[in-house]
Length: 153
Image (cartoon, rainbow, N blue to C red; front, side, top):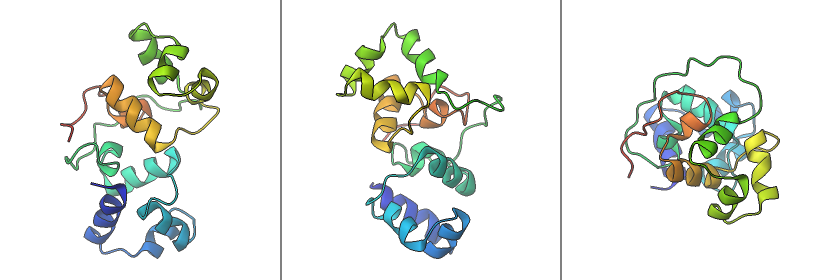
């Protein structure tokens, strides 16, 4: 299932218009429409807001699972902007940044800012990371401490 169908499905289930979501996300209706039509990539901030609003996992929004429930919330509060969880999970697998970059088919210079939090992670990369590590995207983004994903598609 494509993202646009999942976002549209969630919006329609709540009897909302695109302009309603746009208002909640503090953006234009056209901007939100571009998420549903996959013209525009969603930031992790927007993904988190939508997952929280709909009470579903980011994996569900991005079509990695058909289970439409959220994970148990993380106990970690006030996390900084850096993505130490990405570093920790990579190091648990005895991988270097250059190894992860190769797996993602990118340069180490391109990968490093994701891990340090200097750059937002595109949804395509988030999906690849979650699938490679077999963890929920919600885990990577500190929304949950659960490492086991819902059943994958």
